[in-house]
Structure formats: C-alpha cells, structure tokens
Length: 117
Image (cartoon, rainbow, N blue to C red):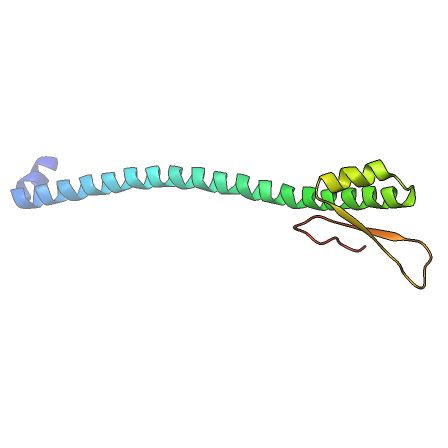
C-alpha cells in the first residue's frame, strides 16, 4: 500500500509534503524553546513580585518602628535616642493638641511623611 501511494505521488508533491512535515517539526521545536523561555521569564517576574510584596510589608514595619522609637524618645526624654534618629535622617517633632494634654510625636523621614494612626 505504501508503494502504491508513493507511486501515485509525483516528485514535486513528495518534496512539498516532506518540506511541510519538516516545517511542522521545526515549528514544534521553536514552540518548545519559546515555552521554556517564557517559563523562566514568568518565574523571574514572580520572584520580583514577591520581593516587592515583602518590601511593602517591611516598609510598614519600618514606619511603625520609627514612630514607636520617636514616641519613646519624647515620652521618656531620651536625647541619645533623638540624636540617633536625627543621624539617620528622621526628624522628630511634637505636636501640641488642645483637647489632649499628652504629646504625640511625629517621626518623618526626608522622603516619606509619617502616618498618623
């Protein structure tokens, strides 16, 4: 049966079908290579996103820590702690509130305003 099919194909048709099969094989190989490349790019993007998400959480923790240190420095009048905060670029200011006699310090870094909580 194979012989009868080959006999019915002209040489041009045979080579055309062979080239089309070869082109399909090349496209499959290219597809596999591209899929592997995309997978590594996706993995890298996921790692960067994870780093960004962790940095956001650490930034919040940093702000809370700085505010707690500023409150402690003002409440316990600790000049050494205030100097250390200033050396790291954190300015501490005390806001006077009319209704409440307690002082609430605000710590800000040069690039970010403090969150009032």
